[in-house]
Each structure stands twice: as structure tokens, then as C-alpha cells.
Length: 425
Image (cartoon, rainbow, N blue to C red; front, side, top):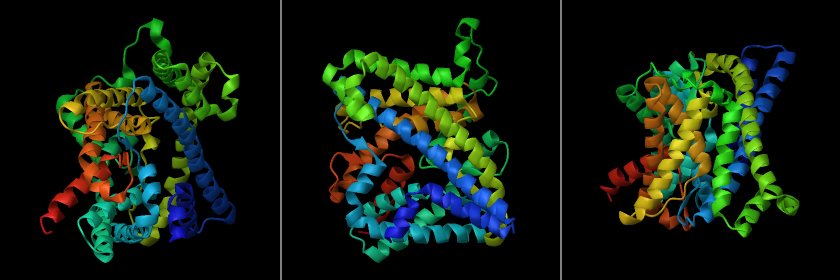
């Protein structure tokens, strides 16, 4: 089980194995087999490295922002709650993951749903969430494994299949689809964009005055966005709070940096690593799609790989930034409202706001033009706050204080299973 857990926590290895098997089944030459396997591994690692450094910048910003404005509450973090409970329910979650993968492959082989869900680290998070819900309802380990495996295995095939009608429009083909923990948000945002938006006004074709023409360069726009957010946070933060954020980034070298250098350098780092992640995405998709065709021929003809949503970020960079800002703003508004309606404060998860907010906006833009990203990311921001607040009691028995699961595809099934199966208890 430890080997399975370690493998699942390393998505780049899973991708490399899939690429290797795909090329092997195509009877590729030894040179092509080695090149395709290692390039897939390198390219996905490139995405991970870019995303990892992004997360470091966002974590420092999140800490700085929360302390500057004295925001205290529950932190929605899948990684944190899994790390805190892995000794208690890790073995059960690993079994669920294994059987969910088998069910996904069987559904792809014998139904019209043709998506193999490759973001298995997200499946592991979902396994932890559903294990917690079913355990607090009093189900045995065997029952938990059976119920959760069936639910998640179906989800792995069904969710990317439903989203496919919208992702196909963005990608332009069926070479791959999307696997992510906020598919429910993207589907809802796509429909809202379709109903209330206007595709004639695409965010990527915004008319900008020549004086602001620099905003057309995505990397510059990204740098300026983080620059503004960091400047605002530093204005309201105390010197010790700023130093703490700098230590998170520089470690012992923080003493040699001043605030201005910190702001400028981290803004540039944020833009640079987003560019790195997007470059890795382009290289990765060029390798994995052809390799996966060999895998599909053996296990299930017509199979489509469902890959991480960051592959879409270079499709609509303007929408991505709009989605991040709108989703984050909605989460800040929820902080002000929740105490008055009896809900716990959910501290905005900056990485979730960026990835799911940006992705929701891309889907909203595809179906509703300029209005679509605003509507879709607004809904996404609400889901990132309301759902963790509602599900917090379901995870109380885990003993992990102050943290909860973050993404809609973990929290919505948790609420549904708790309600439906609770009727029989």
C-alpha cells in the first residue's frame, strides 16, 4: 500500500508509465520508446516544478494577506487534511483508489464513456473525503471500500465525459479531455456562460487602448497582477508579518532582502513559473496524446486521456487572470458575510482560486464571451467557500483541526452521500 500511495502522489511517474505502455503497445522503436517515455516524464515534471514554485509564491502571499487583514478561519487544504489523517484512513483510501481505477477502465471498455482519469492524486483526495464521511456514518471498512470505489470509479469516467462537450470546444479536438477536482464548477459555469453570456465578446480579443497595449502580453499582465496584490498586502502588513512572508520564500537569506526587492522578485517569479508550467503543458500534450493511442488500442479502443486542467491555461490567458481575481474577490466577500449567517470563515486558498478560478473562467469564456468568465469564476468562488463550510462537520471525527477539503468535486459528493446514506442509518 505504501508503494501505491507513493506512486499516486507522483503523477509524473503515472504519466511516464502510461506513455511507456502506449508506445510499447504501438511497437515503437527502442529509441522512440525511451524518448517518448522520458520526455513525458520531464514535461509533466516541468509542469509540477512550475506549479510548485507558483504555490510557494502564493503561499507566502496568502500568509501575508491573511495576517495583514487579520483573517482567521478554516483553511481548505486537501494536502493538509490528507497528511493529518493518513495514518488513520490511508490504507482504506489506497484500496478505494485501486478499485476505482479498475472500475474506470471497465466503464471505458464497456460503455460510451471513454475517459481514463489520469489525475490520480485528486482521486486519492476524494477517497480520503468519502472514507471520512462514510466512517462517521458508521459503515464498516468493507462497506466503505465498496461504496466509495463504485462512486469514484463512475465519477472518473462520467465527469470528464460530461465536461467533454465544453472542453472539446476549447481544445479543438478529442485528443485529450480534462480531469480536475472542480469539474462540477466548470460544467455549471459553462452552462451559465451559455445562458447569460455572449460569445461575440471574447476575453482574448478585448480592445485595449494603445497606452495599455502591454497588457496583451500575458506574462506582463500576470506579473502586474501579483505585483498589485503584494503591494496592497505589504501596505497593510506590519514589518514582522512581511519578514515572516520573506522567510517563507528566502529562508535564512531573507535578512539580505528589502521589501521592494521581495515584491518585484516574487511578482517576476510568479509570472516566470506560470510561463514554465504552461510551456511544460504544451510539450507534455505533444507527447502523451500519441502515446496514449497505443494504450487505448489494447485496453479500450477510442479511449481518451483526461489530464490536468492546467493544459488549458495557454488557451485563454486573459480569462485565466480574470477568473483568479473574481474568484478570489468573491472569497473575500464571503469572509465578511459568513459570520452573520452562522457559517465558519473559510480562509481563501490562493492556489485553488488561481487554478479553479482561472479554469472556470476559460470554460465560461468558451460559452459566454466576456461575461462568461465573470459569471463562471463568481460561481466558483462561492463553491470554494460555501461547500467547505457546509462539509466541515462531516470531517470533524478525523481530528484534523482548522482544515477541510477544498474542491467542489470532493465536497459535493460528501454532502450527497452523507444525506442519502444517512437516511438508512
